[in-house]
Image 1 (tube, rainbow, N blue to C red):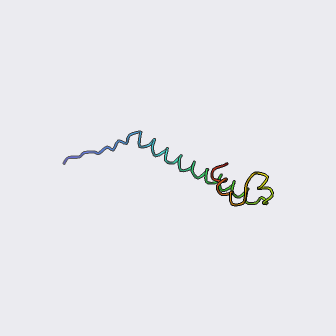
Image 2 (tube, one colour):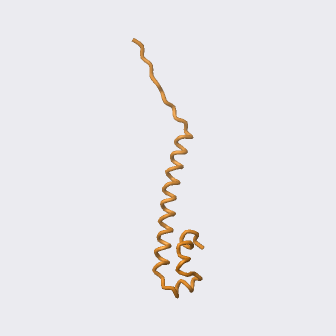
Image 3 (tube, rainbow, N blue to C red):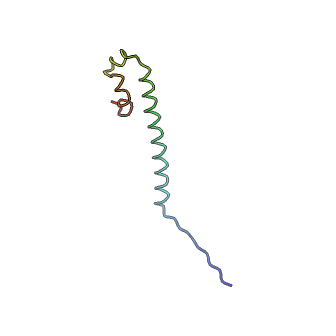
Length: 68
């Protein structure tokens, strides 16, 4: 009877890439939340308050995403 064992060595690069992917995923979620909060805050303003900021109502989405 013979036995053998298989060892699977995973390179540190795999774990680094996996951790980087998870971090990137959560960063993207955070950025999405910040965009949604910015949009929500701006959409609650009156047209006059938006105009004081140099924005029109149709500019809110672009401003929320770009921050400008």
